[in-house]
Image (cartoon, rainbow, N blue to C red; front, side, top):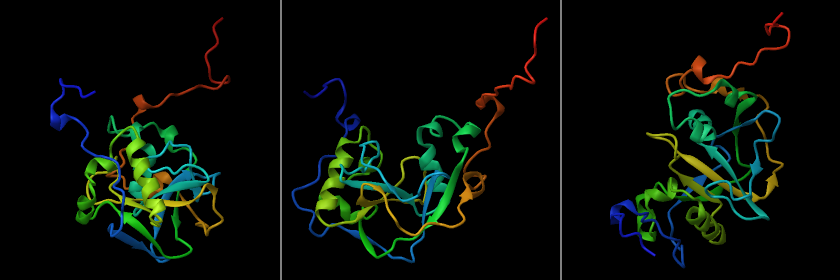
Length: 215
């Protein structure tokens, strides 16, 4: 049922994928393309999720690994909703987070949502930012079925000239080349783009040694 209290421009316009994606614009990723991924230092950067928690997640046995074409975008997209509401973030959210420089083992063609030609297939910018994820995930399944190896799209939490890349693969951890020296997320981030946390954003817990003891 359509909510008549909401104007037509206030309703989502993005629909499901068409029956055929033949000729959909693609972007070529080569082994020379540098991808960036922000991840826990203890985990492999090549993790392909399939729990429907990501915008372009594929259902198992397939999965999706989320990367970006620059380090700042990789960090901002990991922070996501934590960064969105304000200018500062708790220091704890970047604890043990590193940024890896990654390279695909072989050339891949991914769907290019940032191409104007994607509009001919019914793509709007809502596909890059809409929630919940049911419609974007339907597009991911259609792209995968069409033989495209991922999606290049505009990141939801990073304005300006930026691109994210969702890479498709088998669910779980892939045994692909990794960055031997990933850098801490704080060092990988442009200080002008990622504000320093304010003290008010941090929860300080004293240890028993420094906690005052009442007589």
